[in-house]
Length: 490
Image 1 (cartoon, helix red, strand yellow):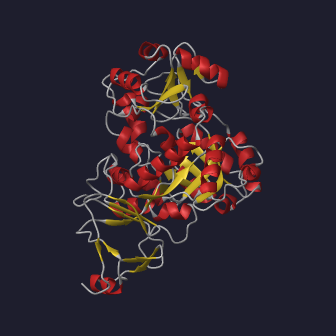
Image 2 (tube, one colour; image 1 turned 120 degrees about the horizontal axis):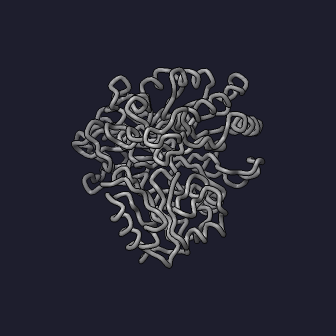
Image 3 (spheres, helix red, strand yellow; image 1 turned 45 degrees about the vertical axis):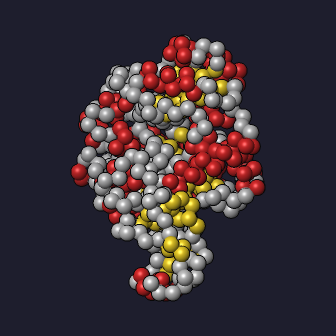
């Protein structure tokens, strides 16, 4: 492969490519490594991922005690009025006991501390943080006795915390570095107003290092006005995002039947079909797409009803999406196909929480878990399925492997199908015409897997050996180095 001017210029024999390589070209011998188009992560939180990189991470904790110790240690380096620790997942702890106000008070009684769950839909705050939240947010979504935060206050947290220009620049750089290390060359985001302002300021100074496709959360009704000055190189806003429910981990995904481990609880329907339909109509009037978060079967039903009120062909024209689609009922994928609404699913969720004995099984029971994330059924329905990670974790290789080893054999995908959903399908969803395939004349976004790594054996934390974005080497491991062409055949 010869790459010139950001494009794949030639696919031919090694002899022909080397004979045409200009003098001084960097030449990589992949030595039997797998070469893939760069990955398109169509559902992630690019800016927030960078912001969170500077905070204590609780992802490695395997008990509540370990998480609390990380919080205590992290307070020594943390900046700002409120210490935020990210990513606890009690389903991987020895005892699935969530942190409470008392736990965090015991660790740091005099400093405001908030610990956010991996899903982003739940968290816990200590007493000083609760006082801070009441002043800056209010009381909605907060249990002041336990310190539990659900949905809106925890989802809006980053917008309540000011950041300096230096911190914002560090966040964008950290997010790009994480993407490139996993071979992601096209990213996505769902920014709230504070993040949108950060994008506007950052892109006014210089282009982002990779394309970021965005859908706005909580914008004003005059969305076009909110977008002023943000349509810059490598940053494109397609529309808006709505939340119809929460997450299974937080037990806030909206269900038709009770959670197996919480009798009487069926989650939270944040928006009904009428409210969603009204917003869709307003967005479409401004030629904007609508992406709706829907995990539980009840939430999915409401969203399908809402999109069903659109004139035929309108959702396809605008580029509407349904995010997650974890618990579709029979026929839901076919409805999406008829409506022209494309689903973005996260195969990594299957490996993280959908296996035997895992969190989904405890929350929902075996029967419902087996019906979850039916990847092949959704693909077969022809509704335009594509993949994203939601950053849990940010690893297309892990997601592709998870799709291949779905616990329900009939729902498994082969490697080429899963890879296509993480490359070309995402590019198509973003309406990028020459992205996502290894073809002459197409954009040279490339990812090279480590030697000996295949789609079948990639691990959760497997990074790539080489990432090329629009013809530029943006990530290279020590295991793969180029030699320099002298402009002659070799």
